[in-house]
Image (cartoon, rainbow, N blue to C red; front, side, top):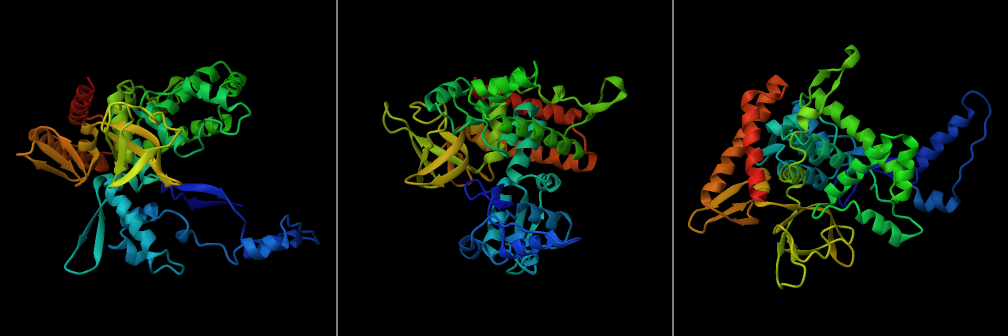
Length: 427
């Protein structure tokens, strides 16, 4: 059966195929004789029945990420403490899984925790959290989508978020691995695995514009997973609808008297690499690693929270000697013989300042420290300026809770200024 589980590597929900429980199998056998005598065929062995199958199905609260549940509790004013509320469930999740969800929500900037004259910690939604509570997607992807719409690089953001919700468009089980790798390299971006997928999507869209069969042939020729690309198309449409429902995308009058989503005004910055990369950082932070150059001829060493990590061989940044930034954002981290990071993109200092959490300015050292771990050498006034910019972004999100619309003169002016600032860093 197909069941939603938590992906340990990325922390997101994923559909996995697993054996049903013995209780499920017994219940399903009863369906064969509901209206007349029937026959139930079970295609598994007695060993599987007794050794592989659980007695009862695992409760959903114990097998899925709990970020959405915590947001729903706070948005519905069902309790001040998500932990206390969830532990009252008939089959509660573990205390550790609830705390992990709350930590992630704080890292993303969706909640703020505080103790009110008692040892019990309570949580409240931030303006960003109010919007994320309305999106039935993982909070990282939701944050990426919201800022993709705000910073008007929505098309690229939709593709990236959709690709992270489905299988990779790069076919893995092929008869000619060398030819497949060569074909995949033609889509590679210089420093971002996410932008590489955008290149695949744009080429696929161009092929399918000439007909469905052309799209299939394009995938076969380039060793791409056609099913994954169809799923990406479907997820993109779903994300647009969700953003429209919460006011981040507006309905426009179309030909024939119909209404639809005209995304042109939300893509005016899709060709500004620095803006797209910043939105990627917004969704992935605090998943960042520091690249330290040790020798001139070798790739830099990567460190994440004092742990040595390595680029996975599937990343476009694998074996790159001179990275264009000292910081790398990543989607997932996993350990085999080494600890690897996969699905990576370079993160520039301005992006980290804009979407990190706390900022400490060290005036005498000419250094700005983000979240105690990201140390950036720059003028102190730059750190102060970005701290003020964060308040402005929060005020825009707060304004949208009430108006449910984007595009006010104040919003446009602020977003344009931030875009120019991000672009100036890259030039």
